[in-house]
Amino acid sequence: MKFTNRFRLIWNYARSLGDMNSETFINWIKSAGSSRRKSAINEATYFTCLRMMSESLGKMPLHLFQTDASSNKRINDMRRLLLRPNPNMTASIFWATVETSRIHFGNAYVYINRNRNGIKDLWFLHPDNVEIIIDDAGIFDNQNGIWYRYTNPDTGKQHLFHTNQIMHFKMSVSSDGIHGVGVRDRLEMMIEGALASQEFMTTLNKEGLTARAVLQYTGDLSGKSETELLKEINKRATGANNAGKIFPLAAGMQIQPLNIKLTDAQFMELRKLNALQIAAAIGIKPNQLNDYEKSSYANSEMQNLSFYTDTLLFVIEQYEQEVTYKLLTESQLEKGWGFEFDVSVILRADQKTQAEILNKYVDNGIMRTNEVRYKLKLPRDEHGDKLRVNGNSIPLEMIGEQYKKRGTEDLKGGDE
Image (tube, rainbow, N blue to C red):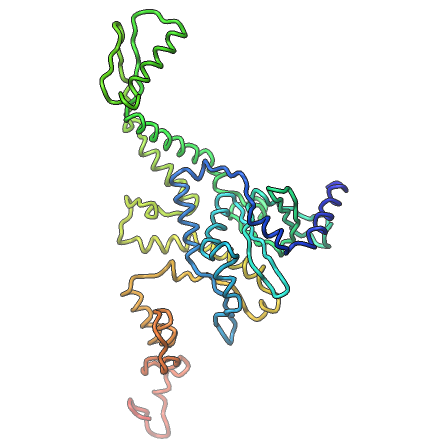
């Protein structure tokens, strides 16, 4: 890096320190916009997969827990932040937007706006406006840190943020572990093929499912006359008032249609295969695309479990690790604090199965009655805060005690 570039980065960073949390900078982030490539999102399968992934993450509530040897409880210190990360977005919309950016662009960035009282709010930064800078020369600190340069698309002003100020969520496919690679970039040819087939079907429907035709003419035509003749024939054949109707032809002309059979070209089979390959690259199961050819409603619950373990589990783990590390202090981490998504929303079973599971939890001393009533949105009971188990159960270390002798008499069933 040249000396002038180093000086410019340091100067921009020093200038940004004074107004990093100012309302002006927040307004820049709110109004940030950029030119996005929308062609890929227009493809039906790709858009459906983006919607499924973003909604799956957005509908899982994020909670702050304290987990250690002595306690396992939910903490409400950041309840307002978890419900509404910033004044413009609810938590569900915010995390759905972040997940869409992570898949589509390969990277998603969230700016952590801090004040004297801690974390004020969180703001989504568009990836087109963020550049990752690796400080391998130790310009800004003594370590090889990662910095993020944000460029406002409206004013062109730049701000430099340290990695502790930015939450960075990336795709698992990465060449260096820092820059994520978007699905759009890896499946560009496949998505373009799906868009072409989708456009072909749209054009075919607009033309009344009519194929191309050959116009036979016995005379000679010059270039200009030929163009005018074809223009007139197309107007009569596909016009708004004449489409599908009989139209006259001059003497010596004959139209011979060129029928295109989609079945012979295996058009629908190839289009379906292309859609399944796009969905598989993102991690969406066929039943989530309403494809029950090799599945049924009976095993859809197992496929939802497979979707959680094969697709969402890694994504959730990445979000929890990044949010926990960036939003909590060292003292909070030492106390066992951590963020967790409520995955029970994804794995929620039917009412009968859910009742059987909760009943086993209570009977085996895993959950208290009031904890179950809280899940079911029922009021607390004054006698529901104690754990209870089956009276026939004994601790593992006491197995065989009933067969030992006490004095000269054997212990029998029912003896005290």
